[in-house]
Length: 360
Image 1 (cartoon, rainbow, N blue to C red):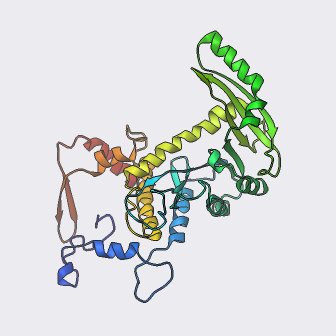
Image 2 (image 1 turned 30 degrees about the vertical axis):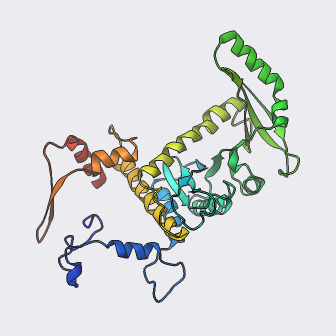
Image 3 (image 1 turned 120 degrees about the vertical axis):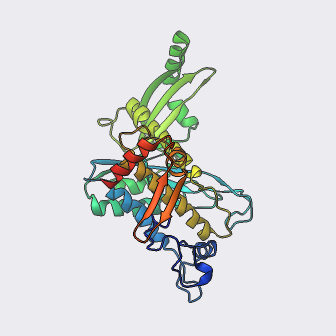
């Protein structure tokens, strides 16, 4: 770790205080002070972190991963629950936190810790505004699509998208009015299921407006689906036109692809994003940043070092097990740090390939 961090004294033998000798990295007390640093300057708390700078860094790393501006990017929004087992700040009567994640493909753009006693989409507009502004400062012409489930289908977010040239495709919670709109399609799907014995889908679309919450009518794509034992209607609202995205393609190819984000969130847990056991929200947000940046490093390893290999799409936990959690003998001389790996290491050739590709 000291070598990777660029320490000129990787063994810690040259440190001034006797008690620090042999310890090249920060101790747990220093890390604890960093966790509990406050946002405003204080003469007694000099070890702090800048949350806004970390937020910008996550987006900057994503932007720098592209050699040229893409024509279109899709931002996925979702939340997950992190169980709590103590009396952390923001816990109230709920036993979990509800962090918000924003991804673009495999790239993590936002990890915002929030208490769970609020709407799943609370605070999402502020995060989106910051990311879009940062993105368009570098890619002014890129087309942006937001994608999320029905928990993010809110007037505030949709109207902002419509006035800032950002497209969206959000799930819509079913209700009696929406179900009545697709009665004939549901009957057709039921007939197909009866004839074939296999799940049947019939797609349609219409313009729809709620009685109170929506300011205007919007395009809704409906999937009338009959599966074994029950009907399974689904609804999606979008700003995309039918000319670019027909109803079936919009649901099956565009909207349903958001399910891959669940795998990205699971990777956060494999990197200890659920270890939010310290007392304050700010300290736990810092821990969430640490797990998020660990993911960013492993995602970059997949993209750069593992391209073309059998682990190019491996989960973070697999990369840790096969490439990072391995034994080696370390010997430090005046000029070099020697890392001698076992000749019986099963993934030696892969490790060499990763090393060479990272150097390139």
